[in-house]
Each structure stands twice: as structure tokens, then as C-alpha cells.
Image (cartoon, rainbow, N blue to C red; front, side, top):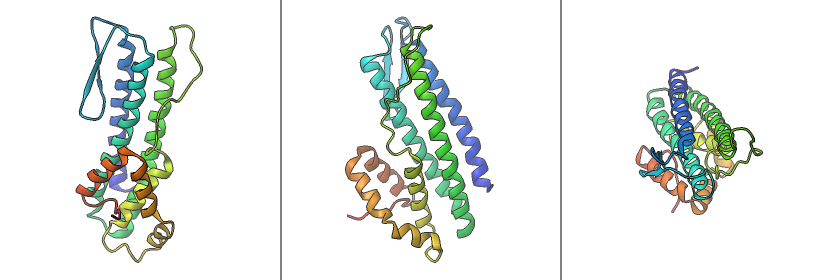
Length: 205
């Protein structure tokens, strides 16, 4: 594993612990004396207490956790971009692929934990309903994470001659990302962030 891959592995382990704490805090939702302070991952915080985990509270839960995972993926890719710039093209490509795999695994783990926690929170401590994934996970799937990784490869200097670039271009990656941006508000914000941090994604007008 490349140094960047090893560092990202540790970074994601730390972030997994943070997300675990974020999920655990929802157990205090019914306590009216100590409202739960929920990071919504959009620069805002919600305070909730003395209510059941249903309706709008559950909507907030799913909206926030999916947004948080998307935001985490983008921020980690921005960090990866900074790290791999010091490598030659072949090493940078290998590092990006390693990091994509780590991020795919990370997103999958947090998704499973969110689903499991949702089931517990909807239960009464003894009886629990079936698991139900109510999250809008677009932008966190394995394919989409790999697309981001491929975009990062395209931004590497001197990479144009490598076979992987011809493969990426032949699949119409730019068109795919343009389509995603049209259909998803979060992606528009993501493109702005990544473009500002070095042009990780190239989009046409």
C-alpha cells in the first residue's frame, strides 16, 4: 500500500469513530431535558429532544447521515489529490485506486451502521421492526466513488498516455458527471468544491 493509502486508512478509521458517535447520540432523542445537538453537515445544527424517532426526526436523521457521508467522500478525495501530486503518474494512479477502495468500504460500513441504528431507534428496547434503508445515498455508491477516482486520474499531469485514461474517456465519464450535476443538487456543490481545490472534476458548459 502507498503512503497515501495507509494515511487515508487511518483517517477513515478516525472518521468512522466520529460517525459512530454521531449515530449513538440519537439514543438521547426522547430526553427533553438534554436536547440532542445534531450536526446536519451543511453548516447548520439541529437541536431535538423530548420526541420519538419518527416523522420529521427520522427524516432529519437520514437526510443528515447521507449528506455527511457524501461530504466526507469529497473532502477525503480533496486530501488525496493534494497527496498524490508529489508522486509520479503510475504511483499516483495506484494510490488513487487504493484510496477509492478504502472510501467505498468506508461508505458501505457507515451505511450499514446507519441502517442498523435506525432499526434500534424505531424499536421499543425489546421489539424491533425490520431493517429499512430510508437514505438517499446517491454519490456514495461504489461506481460513483470510482468515477470520482477516475476524474482525479484525469487531472494528473502526464497521465494522458496511460491506457486507463483512454478507457475512462471512452466511457463518456464527463457526460456522466454532467448528467449527475443536472439531477442532483449535492453534486453541483461538490463540483464547486473540487474545482476550487485543483480541478478534480472537469465539466463542460
